[in-house]
Length: 224
Picture 1: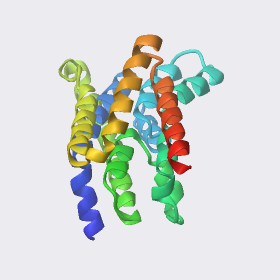
Picture 2: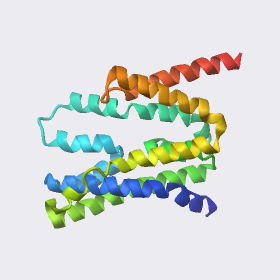
Picture 3: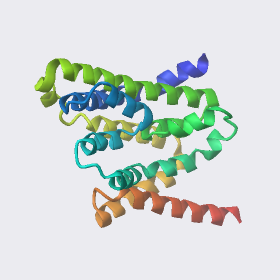
């Protein structure tokens, strides 16, 4: 029970972000003419907000499975690095390990990596974030079906709530854990350089590769 209460407290920022984005996702699904089952099934099985928004458009265009697979891999490639970072944390999680890996979104990774806890805490944070996203999509779809385009004009720019949430989590970890300052600045510098070199649409994967390479070299150096 204590792990569940802690998970609720830690995941409250994600609740606000996922409900805002989920509402937008559900509204868009309704306005594009999909049935309720489409956004719900996509939320439950894809569970990647960026890919789900893209998939809504791709499903009504000329079907190209290879393009869909390539797009999903490019957008979701960063999750591979999240999984590598959580291997030690999830070791010994038994039957929960597969679920924890599947539920490893940006926000869930940020919380579970920043806040050490038990497997139960990691599990409940993951479950709650999963339910937040699905419920947000359902609410958005129902609102979209009932009110149509009336709400869309008021929801423009709400995706910034996720950026604001990451900034808050980053600053909280930066202030509370001085030993992570090196990694934090590595991420900032790598992201800035890759953004300039590769552009806003292509910089995430190169940034992750740069961070992984530097950390690996540092690990090899200190392990000697």
